[in-house]
Image (cartoon, rainbow, N blue to C red):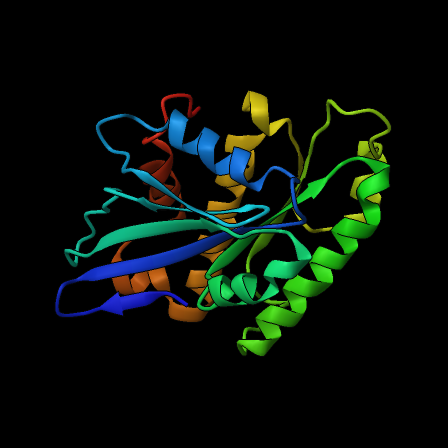
Length: 218
């Protein structure tokens, strides 16, 4: 969960992109990295596995100058979706502050999506993380593929959970998903840590500070 270092006045946040293999998790992070201003983005590190990839990059320097002088650093991860890499996924989920679940929109991928969602829930609970209260959004990627679920059907199925259509390889829906993820992340921090009062950082300022680092941010 959120790490607060009072001596160095640093707040570190961890966000994980989760989902079945080849659903577009890596594409989301690659596109976010490409959209960031060159002067503020850091390098993106890829750790190769046999059949999939684990991707990580430090979202730096995104530093918020609060009244109390704290800086906020954000780390984004994604995990390999292959079944054989379950232990890796479990480790990466430790300490997650928010999750973006990237689903494959194709009807043929429904069982893989469901398995990955159950796997995510089990791994979070194994870390003692309350699954229901953890901030999360769902992205239905690959909208350009044949036989995809209808958006109205998706909305009905997921109810109040924020859902976003996307074609991550084109950058469509990537920033929108990320922006909402940041919104629910902040609200989770506010509920658990009284964030605005302790660190003089409102939801509006949090979102503006993060999103201004993207060249295509609205």
